[in-house]
Image (cartoon, rainbow, N blue to C red; front, side, top):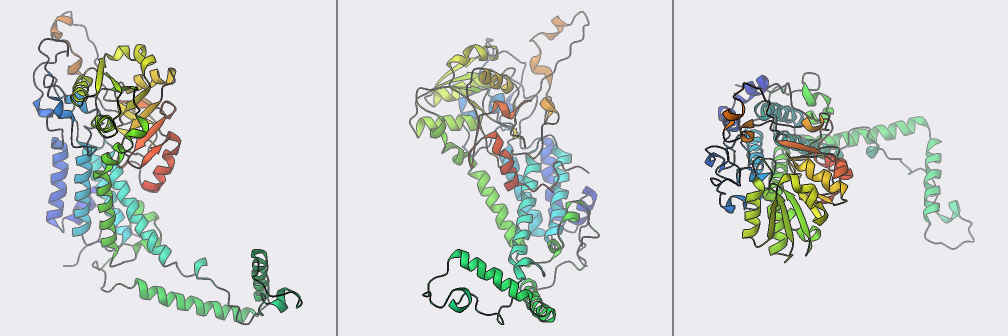
Length: 513
């Protein structure tokens, strides 16, 4: 039975296409089910149980700081505010996803789909990837990391297709045009360009340019039939050469391949060359995906190697709540580069992740001081640098950070203190803009963490009080001084260039039906 190709990125069309490979479809369903069930949550998220207690209450007991140490692979707890679960007495009202592990699992699934399905061209592969993006969005659309990974793979596919086009320019491309000058006089010789009395010498750049102009002018005086016959012969030879190079060793796997007139989605806007079959294209794409996976695995080490450039001895550093990326960054500067500095940690209510962060710093030999969030502005004259994590980096250079980080950024901006955002852009750089302000990529969690120990005593009169507990804050690019990423340090104004390198503007910003 011949393989039926895919023509639309709709979820139903993708599932019908993948049904020809039941094991691949089962792998996709298992991944989506695990995502909905929270299998990629932090391992200690299930330890939290019991009533909510303030960290200064007698019943409060911090978990061992080893929970925050991690393995340095950049696997931040969800939006990098890793210490939300640093205390066993605090319930996990909004499960945090280990996003680095999640993106690696998604890449493994994408590689499995690419390796097992029998697509025949780059355009058909783009349709499959767009369909996977829609599946991920329907299961976990509130987090942009999966969509960013799919967009990045789609850009890799486009890059491989464009490389083929650059190696084999189409017929009539300027790279295939030449001027036959066999019948033209030697305009660079002494008798054509210089008086006979002058000695022979190497022609200058000006003389060469003049000679080329003269050659073109002389060529224009040849009969039109001669030029047409010469160009036609040249086109025929180039066309035959290109056809020999692009002819596959075996026929395409699919008997009926998509073409620009019968496909939908992003594939309907690609050049016709994207629909050509190449036998080595699959291997090139698999190698490119492996490079992305290696980049994600090494992102934390790349960030930590820059710690000595931004942390100096005798500095006072402020950070908010807790983050594995920030913790690893500080520990690397202290242990590897022997920097001696002080860290002030805002506790990060209502989860109080700063307490676990301070204990992890103390265990590493770094002096740490915990303050409540309302004292951030008062402590600011003593601060030299503010280090913040990021849940996402937007196209305008803005940052989606943990709830409460915007307060720190405003205080540092008023006191002229630099704000350094430490993050990996492998899956956090988003091509979207903050059209919704503070509601951009926002999520609300259970307000149970805001309730007092005995909430019934406060609402015996039947009054109604709305409790809102947002997860993220939006920080504008005007409040950010520098991004320290796995590929170097950049100012917010340079983010647009990073977007061009990682994504294609023709790919969807949001994978929706």
